[in-house]
Image (cartoon, rainbow, N blue to C red; front, side):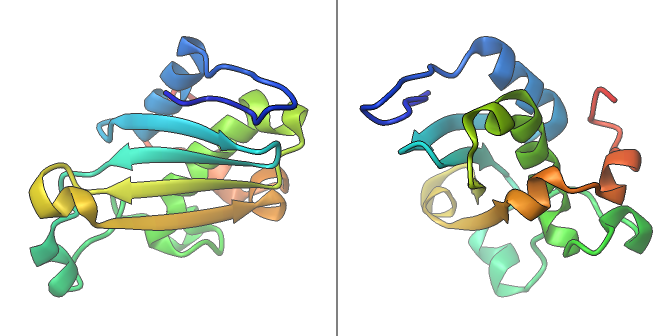
Length: 142
């Protein structure tokens, strides 16, 4: 894990933080957490279902399907990423005054590993109340 906060300060990513994020991510392995400067962080997540074939067929979605109510206005493909980002925000981001959390999802092997989707979550996505917190997926500890 990279986990550096630029030259002004450093805060290594703890095993506890990674474990909390992994609990929310469920079966999708968290591969890296990297802070950029003092205002952004990227969480790299692996998804074996993100394949070139699935992308060409427009059949890939990160995480299990959700209902409109669970989505709470968030695009369905971004729900799990938002939950992961909000967990990081609650654990570290608010204290560090982060401006955004990026969840990068990539395939797990070969060319699929080179393909990725970046999902950006700003403070409004991270700090504001969200119905998705009440409708946690089974992989979450809440």
